[in-house]
Length: 170
Image (cartoon, rainbow, N blue to C red; front, side, top):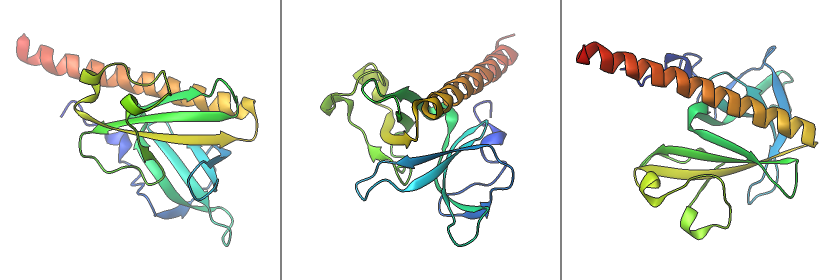
């Protein structure tokens, strides 16, 4: 299928799964939840939003807490606090929420900048995740990575679809 991106599943990451962090590039952050702000690593993966809980017993290991294709993530830093990154996640209608994300209803929110129209939202399940960094530089780095990778993956996907359509139209 032209919409399948093998690299999104190639590493086999799943929520609640432990793994060795090795030399993966990561940024220390926390996730704002109703239970508090647990510490996380934002792994700089080229195809996934990957938030990992550091293993406090075994250094160098972590447990996946949130895994979402990066193409489904919109990142916006908070205008009032440059250490906060708000992540909008759009998944197919009925999809399960990523474990640390909250369902998001744009008609009931004062947040702006994520999704534009009700028609655009009809076939989607929308979620919001708030990630907090130690400083604005780390936040900007994370935002830049997520935006750049989202655009690159979506461009790659668009080219695959165009090639697929052209092969049947020609």
